[in-house]
Length: 187
Image 1 (spheres, one colour):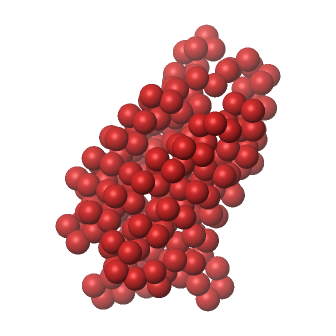
Image 2 (cartoon, rainbow, N blue to C red; image 1 turned 90 degrees about the horizontal axis):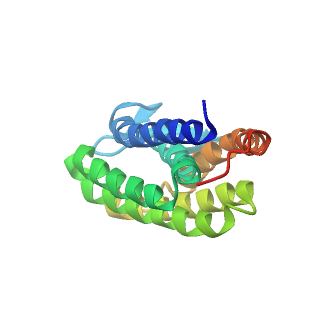
């Protein structure tokens, strides 16, 4: 497979997985967790004594996958993925959280994009980490405030999403090393 084709295939896979995180997060928050709060989210433990809405795991993963989409397919594809993801989020979210879901998704992914873009060519791992942190903080604050009118689960939201970013960093390191070895330049 040629380098350009490999980059495009990997970008398409990341884009599909990115799109799938949105319905998965929306489904998880209402259906899966260690406990489901009446008229509230289903929760999972993210740290001893700290719970978070279960969708946090997918949101953290989405932030990293969007970075890969941009690395493989370019900044315009990254922005198009954000736009499409926002529409998917609004379309699939339960009515009670549709505004919160779409708004948090849009703003967090744009924050991720704004931090990732200037850093990614020279400091890829720093870009993935810093943009993920920026995105997850924005997502957590906006989503919780709009969906529940409360920041009660803020610590859990941030910790749960940060776990996914941290788990992805060794994989991003391996991706960067492989890119260097194979001469797969970022888009």
